[in-house]
Length: 433
Image (tube, rainbow, N blue to C red):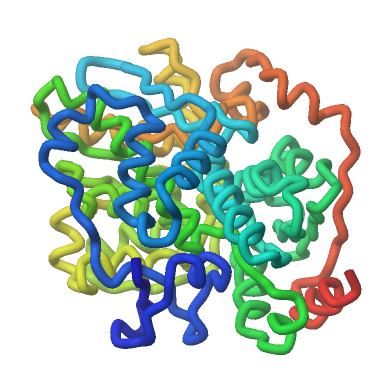
């Protein structure tokens, strides 16, 4: 697989391995494959007979077979993705794809663990070491921390916005220690992301530290996020209805994962990009004008993004043609009041407990479901509701139970370095490690 920068299709092609470790092209674009392999019609026709790991292996092999041999790739898949994907049926045509049954209880375990094991494969082969930088608005940090924890040859530095992640999320990403370090930034997620991007464009720093990224800007994170869309399709294929996926969206990496599955041949009716009031992409879909703006804090904090880093990727899937984008991707927005009412409504109607991000998707999914009688609607459940216990308890007017991993983390001590939103302070921290 050869990849190019979204800022220049004619730019020099790079291998998946090079893109994986560089994170960003030098022109500050984003990597995408120059061409997409298409899995056979028979694969999609017979997909329901395959396990999730088998589906993931076939999809990964189509993209990476030239760089990772079959036995090693299968080992990566089965080691990294050793937890279940659960699809809950709420009604005849409304489903929730639960992606939070991995180690950090969030969907980002798929991307982080696959990426960590793939990087480890290449590092062992090449006898190298690297420093991972990642910005997080919550779940990315804990997933990356868990995925890379104590892997040899890898040091991880996680930046998160002070006071803007939930208490349990903060404990998950600040209590591991070992090769994982946390930086608490006096700013927003967008500020954290900007610091990471600036570091990658700093040649002096890159030369000294051999930096790489684990954010959804890295193509290695996106590829495994396509696998669970195909798993959902496999389990609903027999219904014989068109499928629409409702995707809680912040940086839009998750939705790009769905577009990868579509490019590999997965039949899909459309995607609904579900955001909170940080709705720059739904506004673009409606008007054709993209205008970033500072993010606004909400209850669904992992989606508080005012300039989604994967937006150029999303539009590049459609050759940057707005009309083509809107034929496949629709926009929908839910505010905090609607988020809270949806958490309550899903429990009252179906006995189902959703986190705030999943509730945004379920709100938009319910609207789509009610207006499309022939379509199976799948809302993506991105985090265990107990990770947002205070909000969910308030919406349900009851005390929900914590799963064991969250009970365990409560007894641990936070270890993080607080810095100003300043690149020099960040660089000084890194170079003094």
